[in-house]
Image (cartoon, rainbow, N blue to C red):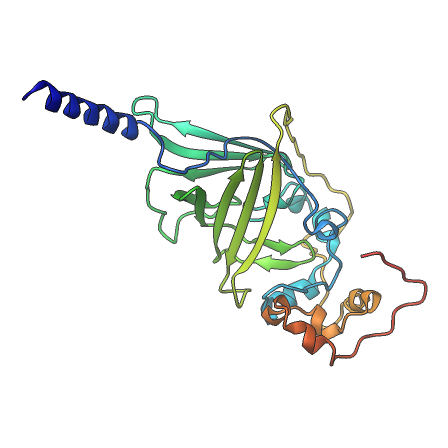
Length: 295
């Protein structure tokens, strides 16, 4: 081999070594400390959603029944006081977020990403090494079992084996049969987490929402110890609820905001712009005297 060809072969070999030692093209590492923003859906996330507000949710009758039966005092039960948000909802906050890599010390290959969220300190593992999901009978947890892969510069995560959770904090449930696709989109110091929920038990269509974070490298997430206590004396086995057809508060939300009661019941139809045309043909309830709102 002459010197010219030998130099070319050496150059190509060095280039291949360099490419193989680099991460895949266009991957944008989401690792870091992140502070959540609340400009999206602020009334739902901070004060909390109102009873009977199912607008924009592609729910079925079973989900409505669960929502209609819900009572906030369920959270007083000792078994519910330290429940973390499930991984598909935890992004909604309070959610100071940390994301970090787990790398094999021998091969330096990425094994997983890990996330830690401030409220109740849940941690999710996102396996990046190609391992399969466990069988259907494997244990379900609040964080579920997650695997990730890169789609260009977007990290796509698939999660199953979730315990039953919630879609909205007014009783709208998400079943343990659901699967979730989560997408991490980083743009410099901004991170968007998009969650798509597929639930054959309670949803008629996939439900999609996004949550935004901003880089906060100086933040320090403290521990979140939680100890349940008996806050209220109740007979053993009592579960606060409204029996079907007995919830007296369901019409307060549509009446206060001038929304037709049928629209407040949600459903896939209410997600789309065309529904505005139908709203014009529907009757609203009289607004309660003295009720004012800026929402």
